[in-house]
Length: 269
Image (cartoon, rainbow, N blue to C red; front, side, top):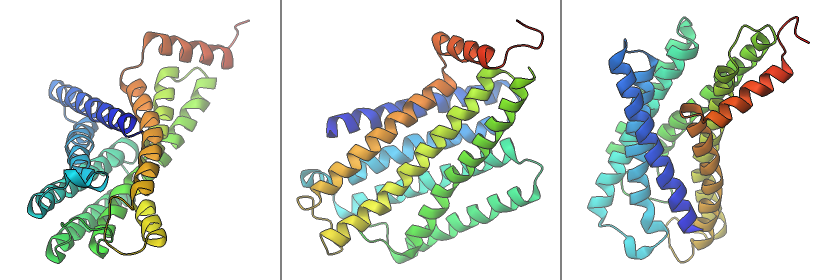
């Protein structure tokens, strides 16, 4: 199962880097818009941040891979910084894409980014960059702010998909574009659920094993649970993300033919 988890995690890292570079090139060839913020999310959070996370937390699965405390603290600080900055970029992307003209959305982004910055400073001040099974309040503040972006993004994506489905019935929308928002909503849901696994696993360990120190031998069941859950969701995330940005010809034909059957053009037989 660890091998499968590693392949899925590695696949998502490569895909995130590929999409990030592609979006950066798109932003350079056109006027910079929401795509630049999405590119930064994929490169800074999904690739660099999560890559560092996988490296730092390997010791929880295998004690032989434990890093010196100073090294793990620095890498953990970089991981939290990368994911925090990247999620901030994803917040800006969501605002510009779905709610550009809404004052409340702009205010929400400002508040959440401020909370993430304050939380990160709080972690630094409290010394919580050291790996801990039960981190302090500041850590959970940044965690809540980071993961909440996927909740907002999935709501907006499914809402927009519903709007485009109505337009499809009138022949006023493109089936592939409408499907892209569905895939984006599914991806966001998968990412949000993956974000909830970490605190659930920590709570399970403390409740069933006891203590606030991670012991790899005792935490083996938790690791298996984590790997199984994240692998399943990781496959969902990888597939939907790939089809969103790199839809195959076969997939395109299937979406378009299904839309034609469900919403025939007015006057057609």
